[in-house]
Each structure stands twice: as C-alpha cells, then as structure tokens.
Length: 169
Image (cartoon, rainbow, N blue to C red; front, side, top):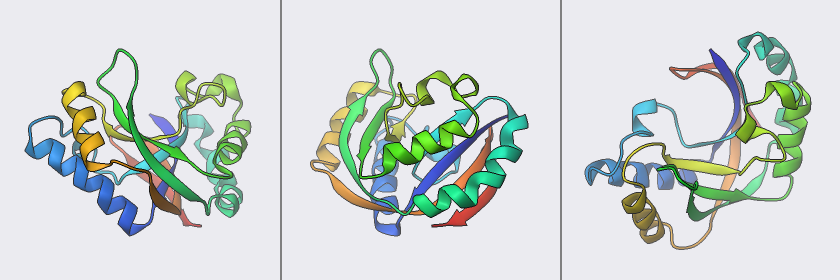
C-alpha cells in the first residue's frame, strides 16, 4: 500500500470541483474521480513504502501548522500524452510546504512525479476518460482562477483510499 499526504479544501472550492466531476460523469467523459470516493484534494507527496507511514504520521501536526494556505485553483491543464486533466494550484507557501513534506522521507522514497523538482501542484479532474472532452469541459466550467482555502491535511493509504490521520489546519 502506498501512502500520501493530501490537502483538502473549503466547502465552496470542494463543491466547485465536485460539480465538474459530476458533469463529466453525466456526459460520459469520466467518472474516475467520483469512483475514488475521496474529496477533491491536492497531493503533496506519494510514498510507495507504507513503512514510512509512521514517520509521516508523527510529522503531520508540524506540517499542519504550515498548511493553512490560501490558494488559487485553475486554469485547467492536461499532462502530456495522458488523459489526466487537472486544475493548476498556486499560492504563497505551497511549494515550501511540499518541500518540507518531501524532506521527511527523502526524494528517493517519493514517487517520481511528486518529487519537489518534478511536482506540478494540481487538483485532478480525471485520471482516465476522454482527455480532449474533459479539458474542453474544464475550460468551460472553470474559465478563471478561483480561490480555495486549505482546511485539512491528511495522511492516506491507497488503493482503495483510507484516511490514516486527519488534522484541521
């Protein structure tokens, strides 16, 4: 089982992302994110070695102190040569928080796309489905950046996703 540190958002931002997820499912584009049964989130790091969960669990309160961030979600994007469509995420302190999480386990333990030098902060809109249609819909439903406030930090195991520790920020 892999483990990850994730950030969850305020109710308005969460509902806005869920609206896109539901519309994608209604249109037959993708239900991949609804199928996860996990709220809209930003993943800071993914670690394949579940043995590191204890380290991350102990450090989560310290990370939570720095996780009360005001972010912007958008614009939509797509990872090259994939059907993964997402909303970009930006905000003061975000990269520093991700780097702090990464130092807890070291780059070698982190999945390659979640290492600080390769990480693209994003909220996933779909992991599989019709990439072109998903990106077009995302641009239509999310035409500008929108504010999001981080409310919760979690340590999760997957797959399936199981919350191992949850802290308000």
